[in-house]
Amino acid sequence: MEKFIIVGGNRLTGTVTISGAKNAVLPIMAASIMAGEPCVIYDVPRLTDVRVMKNVLKSLGARVEVNGHAMVIDPRKINYTEVPEHLMRKLRASNLVMGALLGRFGRVKVAHPGGCAIGSRPMDLHFKGFQALGAKITERYGFIEVEAKELRGADIQLDFPSVGATENIMMAATLAKGTTIIRNAAKEPEIVDLQNFLNRLGARIKGAGIDVIRIEGVRKLRGTEHNLIPDRIETGTYMVAAAITNGDVVLKNVIPNHIEPVSAKLREAGVSVVEYKDGIRVKGRGRIKALDIKTLPYPGFPTDMQPQMVALMSIAEGTSIITETIFESRFKHVDELTRMGANIKVEGRVAIVKGVNRLSGAVVEASDLRAGAALVLAGLAAEDATVVENVHHLDRGYEDMEKKLNSLGARVIRVNSNRE
Ligand SMILES: CC(=O)N[C@H]1[C@@H](OP(=O)(O)OP(=O)(O)OC[C@H]2O[C@@H](n3ccc(=O)[nH]c3=O)[C@H](O)[C@@H]2O)O[C@H](CO)[C@@H](O)[C@@H]1O
Ligand SMILES: C=C(OP(=O)(O)O)C(=O)O
Image 1: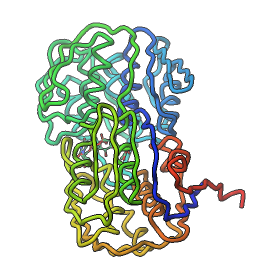
Image 2: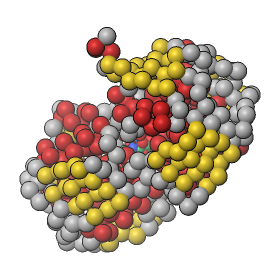
Image 3: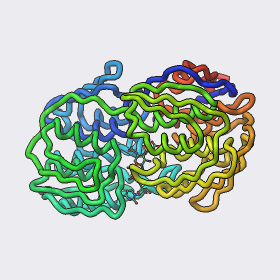
Image 4: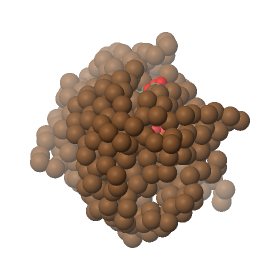
């Protein structure tokens, strides 16, 4: 198990380049299963989630090669429609291959992905969508089998704008007969990136980015080349890194619009955020002001940035109220931040954060990806050294995190606990 040792107190300054988006590459890799020819994806981040998804595709029979940040996927020899259980367990987003396999082969079998550290994460909305398209679902012994003789377009109203359900239904509907309409669809930028990728393959999809998506089924797809959008959550995390250290950081390879909910909140907290065409400059202006934040589906404030904002608010002037509406147990970072001197109380889905003057270093444990990010950010601002254990969670979603932070003047050292 690896951990980070962080020597806090350095003001971050300089320029950092944001990687391609984890939450865009995973559905796009899944969608490539349906391509009739090889696909090339550029700006692929080097993350463990991407490596696991690559192994999922290979286990199905695809050829996948990575060269730097480019990935070539040749799906033509895929002949297997069952995802091995150990891979399903390693990566929640592996459930995204369901829509693509169903679209191409009319069947798929996976192990139930179950819950995770941030909540129960059911798949009922994905299943309702598949059923509306004419598929039959059987759940037995922890496995889910989905089968359809023929997928037929349907009018689907989602009870909640689930990102994964929208993506899975879009993929299955791409090769269905007739027209599918997804209402109350998720509007995240990653849905737009998936639409763009699928349309380049020959799909006929309109509406991603608004809440009604219309898919005219096509018979087959070709190959394509695609540049991923930048990771808006990595962007937001480095913006908070600048703010929490009262630093001055320029972020490159950013789509400022995608991170607007975070920029707006940082400005409200007194931080200077200046947007350029494909960059953002974030500059601290003294003590952070307390804020109220409520997580919501896009374009609301992203749940994937909530833990990082709790870390920032822990040293703000005043009391902040942070409400998490998306995942029911996404406050695991709070106990760890408390060990570092933060004053936070959680009541149900609300965290009440009373800002303290300073945090102090401690040994803390990352329970999941963004909780880990919150602890790293707290460590950057804390007095003395902080040890963040279970860094493998961070490697799921942040490429070269310690290198990027150190290039801005932080001191973050990766240590392998087993070698001590
Ligand atoms: C790989 C990826 O893109 N992951 C993102 C995706 O996850 P993911 O696609 O899993 O998130 P969803 O939008 O589906 O989930 C949001 C909420 O809907 C609920 N739900 C979802 C599906 C369903 O069938 N039934 C149901 O009740 C979930 O339990 C959760 O409470 O969107 C989340 C919400 O922005 C982000 O935190 C994740 O980083
Ligand atoms: C919750 C996240 O990812 P996943 O949906 O892959 O678990 C995340 O990126 O914060």
